[in-house]
Amino acid sequence: MNTTNSYRDLIVWQKAIDLVTQLYKITNKFPREEIYGLTSQMRRSAVSIPSNIAEGRNRGTKKDYVQFLRIAYGSGAELETQITICKRLKLIITAECIEIDSLLDEVMRMLNAMIRKLSTPKS
Image (tube, rainbow, N blue to C red; front, side, top):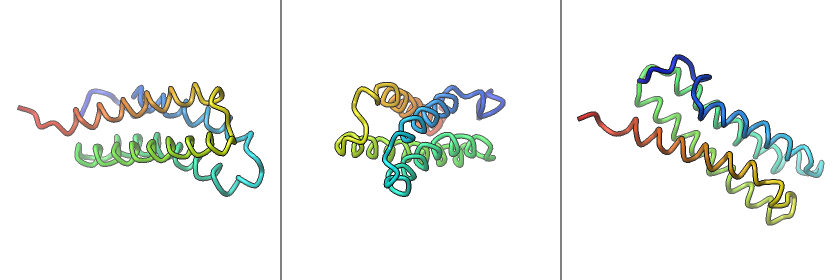
């Protein structure tokens, strides 16, 4: 696959962990009535990103790895949608989201690049 020894060495995994940490800080401020709604859903989506990167990295084949990266990418799109909903509901203000929006964008771009690179057949 690649020369990285562990998923922990992957910058994309490290950034995804930072994303989860920031998201937890933001959702801690949400109203209690959202604990089983958006708070829970957003946390699951965020945690899914580094979890799937790690699981895919430890699978035996490149095909499996790419599939788990795609799942992580899908979770990122889910989270992006949920953040947009929170902004519209005014659960969070846009200024609070600058770091999380930036991290999510960076993680999504990195995942997309990894998927493209690993999916391209070697000539």
